[in-house]
Image (cartoon, helix red, strand yellow):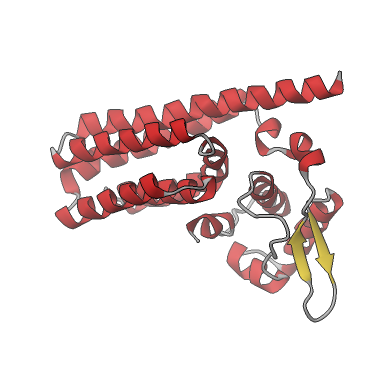
Length: 247
């Protein structure tokens, strides 16, 4: 699945074990990796993430210590997502570990990449690329679960950035989705947010078909910043709930 491809995309250079822990913990707490789902084995993870076996083992040990995964030994063994993480949800919830400023900065960076992608796509995308994006938007509308909605959303955004004909913009978008996909899945449990995003995509398609780069950039920027603000609100609600449970 697209979501899993993003989760297990290669890791950067700095603090590799910590990056793996953060990425997998985010995916577990948001439900993208489901209860009792088996993770790839250490060799597969090392290959997918582009790190050493030792780094993978260190990350998995940390996830076990946090009681987010468990391990079975033997022929059918491996590492699995714990099936009872609700009691740790607030403590390890990915948004609770991030500041509002960080989320806003992530949203602004995402806006910059996608707005420029939209401007270029309006000039450069072919009829086939526009038809493909339209088909992906329809898939997004029909998706029923939060994971499928997030997956379809990421495909739409990647298609838009690819239609810019800029490899750097497309690579930047894929990198941003490593964080964005896990977060936006939280919002797409809300049918109203999903429907509003779909309507924005329909507007975007109209601006692209008219080759109106400025309108296309405004449309996609509005979508991303609205989702960013909703993520900040979501985070504040998590923090309020945590404080309430401690009082």
